[in-house]
Length: 470
Ligand SMILES: Cc1cc2nc3c(=O)[nH]c(=O)nc-3n(C[C@H](O)[C@H](O)[C@H](O)COP(=O)(O)OP(=O)(O)OC[C@H]3O[C@@H](n4cnc5c(N)ncnc54)[C@H](O)[C@@H]3O)c2cc1C
Figure 1 (cartoon, rainbow, N blue to C red):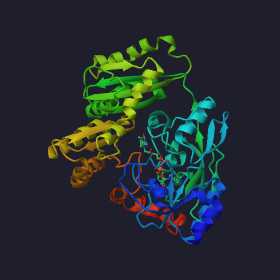
Figure 2 (cartoon, protein in one colour):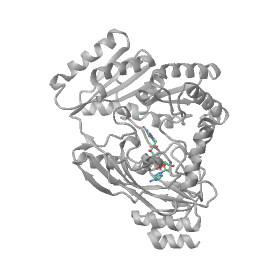
Figure 3 (tube, rainbow, N blue to C red):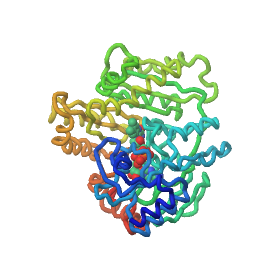
Figure 4 (cartoon, rainbow, N blue to C red):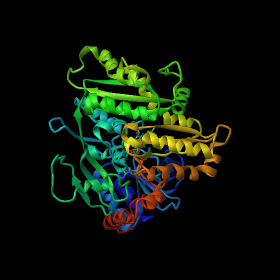
């Protein structure tokens, strides 16, 4: 095919992969829900090459599938099964472009992994607060394209909130570059917002300028057993009333989520000798010397009212970075634990914070009334109102067969309850292929029409990531 020859001449033959053995890993998603086939995988080595790759594809009317770290949960980076779509991998765009310690900004190419971007900020004495379990593999371009959330949204916001500037290659190869990183710029539409969360359907993000923050002097981490889900959110309100927005994370684990992860991580000691039904990991940042050397004493004082009120049943404080990381491993490894058990029917809902307890209670009751031996693995960023309400097959049944037979009904129930409570079916994982029908079902006419109008205006040929999102 002529265009493949042109692409090889442009980026080098070694970076246009055609053999199935080479393209396979680009054609299956993180959860192995989707298996596609690519015409080829192209790996541009510079942003200029990316521009020219996309111009060539546009001229040849080739569909393009942007591919980041491939850790997304919704099949957004996977080509369809036609064998006619070109996967464009950003993996070689992995340069740190600039770090400005005065403006506190970091400018990186889209293929820089989140972990490498964090490390660059740390080396400059600053903090990039975006963080998540997949950070060793996911890329900044993927993070922005999915508007990723993660573990510190409570204080620092989502990927969208952390973005000051963006460079995007439009579907026809034109470059839209706004990497200045201005904190104030009221010159018409804020176009970068269109591409954040667009899941590669409007263009390819080639670089971004991100906000950095002062590094905290220390992090304080408490792992608490709480009476119920409502106690978790009440505890958060209490701690925030005392510490303001220094609270960075409030993560929840149900008893099942904890048991699964403890079985997987045999090298990590469980925080308590007895089992509880509900756990919370709370973390806050310390700046300056406000807490001084008596932090443990201060923390005990902070927790004494919720203990006296019966909200907190037990708690441990991390006394070292090693202990802190061990507590975080419990939370971060829940997805891996579910995978080890044959996978789960995953959900990523959000509801208003005050409704989380009601949501978890109502959904659990309705699911268990219909499928009494289901295993519920409920966990997530509860401080953001975001719960991963995951469901594992009854232990005696085959996970894949159960999912085939009952998955759709279970998900419909989980999503419908969130919807009726004013929530969202996709808090942070996006839509991709997996939730496209839900967007059509729940977005409502005018919203969907506006999204389609934007898509048609920027990508009239429908070449960007066809079939995803819309
Ligand atoms: C263990 C684990 C933990 C996770 N924890 C979290 C979490 O806490 N919070 C959270 O939000 N997510 C989480 N995720 C999901 C996932 O890591 C994020 O969605 C991440 O942002 C995806 O980045 P990626 O580079 O892997 O993107 P990919 O999976 O490669 O792509 C995702 C989408 O973005 C598009 N895309 C990728 N790069 C570009 C680009 N440069 N320009 C345009 N479009 C592009 C793709 O076409 C696709 O539609 C987790 C995943 C795993 C496996």
